[in-house]
Image 1 (cartoon, rainbow, N blue to C red):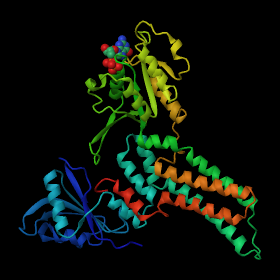
Image 2: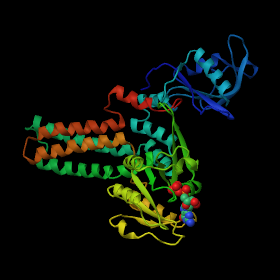
Image 3: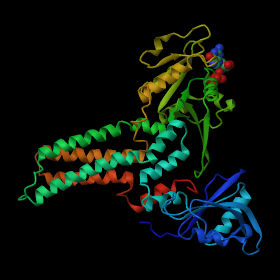
Image 4: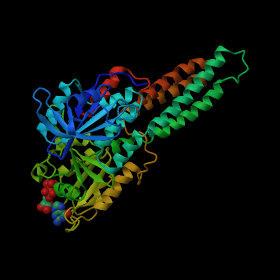
Length: 458
Ligand code: GDP
């Protein structure tokens, strides 16, 4: 059922100089509001617009009767719209001034300025999509590589929801069976026993584990792999970065809303988004040649998923190299022996115990393919299997973990021979935890928080 909310409006496109911008209006009053500020050709009104069609005309300032902009109006009638409410979109000219003037006219005519994520939130509250699908809509927008976008798209179409709903349904049936056995022992139905419930529970746990096993890959696909490149000055860090960035389209995202706008740059390695830590101005080599002290390296190493250490093959190791080598031993690492085009001076006995040692030449590109292959091996067991990646969102992962813990607790209860209805309490908690993923069992303020992290106009 569509709930009756007030009518909201926002600019749905990125503000800037562009051919068109779209102002999106959603709510039962959307068409009336737009019609009050719209003037069509030959004074044609817009109230009789056919759903899913467009109409040409002007937005006018009702106080002065002046034209604000030339526009196209489209109308999507609820429930067959993004929000499941009546939606009107005004295509006006892109550009800061006219887009904002059109939005102002819409607000003056009675719409409320939408909060970040409010359109998607309506789609959720109106039951058109579940919470994981709503989150995936945002993931599509911020996807860093084609592969990330593909996985977000699959989620927006309900891929994780389907698995989670099946699990929840099974848990519910188990709970019902236990309750029926306990409450109506005299009935003919087949009794749930500690043993029969354990068997089913093990199957559920197996499914949970298989979903969880995709979480690490999923997180990297969604958020990117945090990679830090370390090494002492002049080993070739900036040369490597520059050649990686040049070859692999880097994507820059601004993350506003923090005290200082953070700029993140991503390298696209065959679909794996790689975030190079702390490289504001990645192409500004001056910044990167910055002499990274040992302490700073330590900090960066701790923040990363993968450390790439570069050593210079044409010189022997110095104390500073050895200090860095010791720092990375317990992290996932790749050691690049750079400048393999020069005469070799480096003695390898200090490299004992290190994994993934690859010779490269940042200058001529030799060995870069091996570096890529090595990253894929380390994080995706060699190949990325899109059909299996389910969990990309940390929030979902935590909910699945909690469900797993509750299922394990239920299994314990059954194994020590306690009454089966005690186990059903844990099963119910597991069912609740899984429901947080789809938003079925979630507190309203937490839902608000999730949507508030969305962008405006979405
Ligand atoms: P950083 O201080 O670690 O960032 O090192 P740079 O990338 O600035 O490189 C230091 C010097 O080594 C520069 O003169 C590079 O041209 C040179 N260099 C980097 N990689 C190679 C390589 O593979 N072969 C050779 N011969 N020189 C390299």
